Image (cartoon, rainbow, N blue to C red; front, top):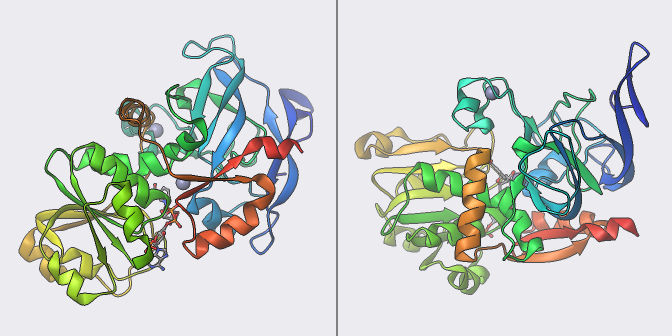
Length: 368
Ligand code: NAP
Ligand code: ZN
Ligand code: ZN
């Protein structure tokens, strides 16, 4: 359990922080299934909030982390960064929340708060490295952070979000990662009424990208490998679906888009999508991390002033803006609620793109 000790946390025999045992679900190694285990959470300090987790979304990043796809996973790994719940305790200096409030926690639980990025509300680009909700460096207890597949979480109020009360709480959970990860590039690249946006891949991120782009007034095209998803995509708000493996269909959208959000998790050929960008258009990769194969051809980029960019989640203020927008426009995720004990099967289904369109864990099941 890293440096985290049961019950209380000591350094040189001096008590530095009270902790409590928390039931969680995680994996002891990359090739093992997830199972129940016990982790430790700090008792609230002055600025902290303790949240009883009611629902936690299942992101493809949870699976990448559990299986060490990116390298660097520290075990035991407890994934989960689409957290919603009810506040059970607040520290003495907390001002934004009170006990009983609904609250959300996304992918970030800390950052340096002093660097240029943090000062600009871009905590996700903290120059000193943000603290991930899981697999991050725990500044309080030592060891690493544990995510939302657990009974409770303790987070500094700066990193806690207010959840719109009018929305289905379980369906709000995926907004905390899938929502903000697609909202942030839509806003950064100034998507508005009349923009032409395309989304690659209809999964957790992809379906939120369609809903949010549509909510901002864009016309939206989905690129999918799966012909079976066409009707769903249209229901979600897509104006058009292009089967990306069909060269004839790809020709129909040559030079069309201002912005493409590519959510595909694994290495894939980005060149055909660059060809569908308008002059000065941008394709933003938010899924796959690593070297591209085949290589990017610079010719269409240079001759059309096209950009290939990347983006990671979003800052706290921007996440609140997205949640408020969703509250106002009644936007939530399409979800399939599962029990905690069904997570291993859910990961297998996610690998087959067999999710409509986000698994959300009912955390009450962890109490059983
Ligand atoms: P997901 O629900 O599994 O959806 C991914 C979709 O991509 C699938 O539904 C499928 O759509 C398509 N796809 C899957 N494998 C493919 C392949 N080999 N080739 C082409 N298309 C493929 O995953 P997600 O939760 O949306 O996450 C997507 C990626 O974003 C993951 O890699 C995740 O780690 C990453 N992520 C990044 C950030 C960030 O801040 N940048 C935040 C969260 C997640 P079709 O069936 O329609 O083709
Ligand atoms: Zn995520
Ligand atoms: Zn910083």
